[in-house]
Amino acid sequence: MTASVTDWSAFPELVLHPERVLYRVHRNQNDPVHFCSDGTGRFDLTAVDGTGTCYMSPSPIGAYIETFGRLGTITFSDIAERCLTELALTRPVRLADTTDRGVLGSYGITGDISAGTDYSPSQQVAARLYEAGFDGVYYTARHDPAFQERSVAVFGGAGDTKLFVSASYDIPDELLRQGAREFHLAVLPDLH
Image 1 (cartoon, rainbow, N blue to C red):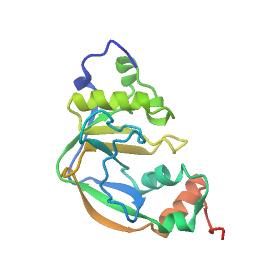
Image 2: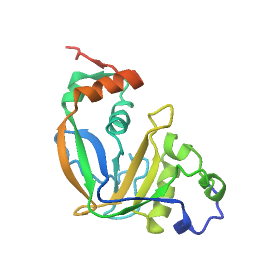
Image 3: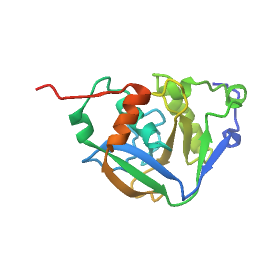
Image 4: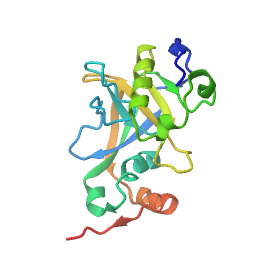
């Protein structure tokens, strides 16, 4: 990251509009609109009281691989205890676009911001972007080896009305087949 950068408000942006649907795979018992701030998420706002980050994908397969790609082995129980939720935006959301190639020279940002295992630099960038007025971050999905899928991290907190749930349902069989076909993420029977 370039230390001399002072104008984070000029960061490349992508605006998502209210008609845009985003996807999230989460445990059935959890609220689908969850703003994490405990440091376990890539762009968590750990130092901003009452504000966290909700992680989603512009595509169902992106949400699927970001959840199940980290497990290694996926069982039918893993699938059964989670659902796919469609979330709609209630207003335009201004995202900092870390996939813009210009961020390398202007901000010193590389692909590590999306794929690195040390979340500290990503969280520092998230804090700067939040302070600069961005609603979140648009970035490359870490669990796609081809780096074609994208992810969305939206900043907010309890009572935030940027997002609303439009539908939640069991993870469709076609999504399981797509995960197996494209990413070789097979779902295995549970061991008893």
